[in-house]
Image 1 (cartoon, rainbow, N blue to C red):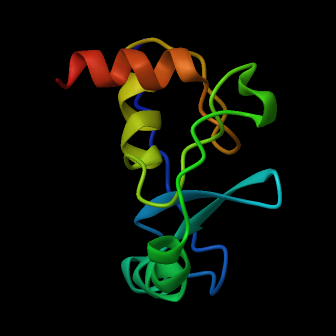
Image 2: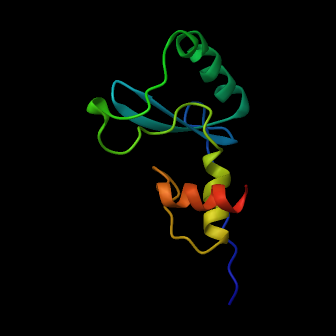
Image 3: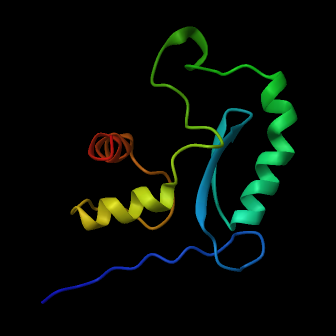
Amino acid sequence: MAQKVQVLLIDDLDGGEAHETVTFAMDGKSYEIDLSEANARKLRESLAEFMKAGRKAGSRPGGRGKPRAATVGSPDTAKIRAWAKENGYSLNDRGRVPAEIREAYSNANA
């Protein structure tokens, strides 16, 4: 029996159709939010001044451990999720996309 799994994103701000999942970090905590193109643009524009003045944080304090979560502008998580499901990966519809899946997606789409 064949199955077709379709992931529909809902904008977490206004309840309309979302087009992407935006990942960002603040105060040591990572967040993901599903947004329409307009709301994603609004978020990026709101943070642009701060991002320009800030510096990129490459790793956790002390230089140990894995790099921090991706920041605003990371590859479209919705596309990664859809690709992962089409390619047999087990993945939740929400939450963080594991690094190994992001890496596999990147390798497959390089």
